[in-house]
Amino acid sequence: MAFSLALIIILGLSADHLIRWLKLPGLVGMLLVGVLAGPYVFNLMSQEMMAVSGDFRRIALIVILLRAGLELRRDTLNRVGRAAAMMSSVPAVFEIVGVMLVAPALLHITRLEAVILGCILAAVSPAVVVPLMIDFMDRGRGAKKGIPTLILGASSLDDVFVIVLFTVFLGMYGGGEMNLIAKLAEIPISIVLGIVVGLVPGYFLYLLFTKYDWRPPKRTLIILGTAIMLTWLEHICEAYIPIASLLGVMAIGFIILEKSESIAHIISQKLKKVWVFAELLLFVLVGAQVNIHVAWEAGLAGAAVILTGLVFRSIGTYISLFGTPFDWKEKLFCVVAYIPKATVQAAIGAVPLAAGVASGEVILAVAVLSILLTAPLGAVAIMIFGEKVLDYEEHSAYKFKDIREKLDIPHVGERVRSKKFGTVWKVIEEKEVWQEELPAIYLRYWKKNADNEAGTGKTLSYRYSQKDLSFHENWEILYDW
Image 1 (cartoon, helix red, strand yellow):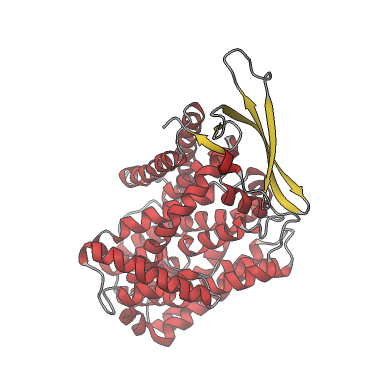
Image 2 (cartoon, helix red, strand yellow):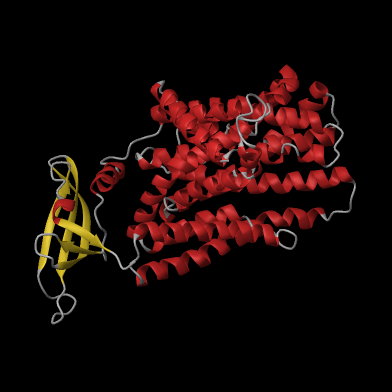
């Protein structure tokens, strides 16, 4: 397995660099490396690596969803809430209907089998969409109208909705008894429980991080471990009660951001570094799941079914955005952002075949073909179209994020030590300011002595910008652990 990890790192990074040099999303190169190195082409991956592939992919997805949660601001969610609710179900229903109408004639399968196929194809891929939306948010794109936030929230809910429908129709095919109303009720129940089981530990972690001033890497590992435990909880409880654990993962980040923006920012920056490795694992291993020989069997008929489904899905997405303040170009961007398929199709594409569905091989072939066609093309379209359509917020916050990351400066409540005098100070104020048209971070320090109380004693103020990168020359940040 060590050799397989080395291949993932070396080939994945090389492909990422090459594809970015071509002005395309790096994940496209990683997917292609996975396809070529996987067991269905050159078979360079060990059996041990493929056996744990699902766990690695889940952990990588948790990393990016935590970052997504740490970027979800309540005011933005309030603005896009109705549209997100519509986009979580309406486009998927339209796509399922489109596939149901054409698949029986083109693929020679029954109507119910076509609906099962439609449920598999209707899930948008958070693995592809979320990292691209996070990148836009980091750079301040679409900040005014909250478009990346809308797509983040809606795509996560979309998967919950589609997977429940898939379970319902697969159960109907088996002919077993099923309470349809109870099964459909799992959708809101799993969403609510997923959010609750994320908010509770998230709030506890916030209290823990404010009471104990631990080093950022340790905070990050604790929050990552908690998020992984949530997905384990979903697996344990799935026979009794549904829990959308990936929504819970995002809820952890959301509540920490809501309660302490400074802690959320620090953790998000550390997760950004973890994502460098997690991204390689996620996309290379997703690519390794793709059996191009099976996809080839789907042929032009399979491609026609996928295209028809996407046309119907696009209509549903556009309808979901009626009443929003978006112009037609921004609505079209949302349509494009809802195209990529990958994670869900790789996870459940083979389930009908294993369950004894007569057309299981055809369904698997079309599911695999949908990944090959939509994941790279959708990612490229999102990046190119997003750069042209999404607005920049005036004096955008992304410039401050750049300077914060470059300087690695502390936040309010953190302690620093003067390297020259050895004295300990506490940051009591921070502001984002503009200095000569350059973004700068204003910090005010308070020198706490044994004989002074809060609000008294000496203070110092500094501004740090691209012209003054001297923070770590004069100060070091102090942590308890």
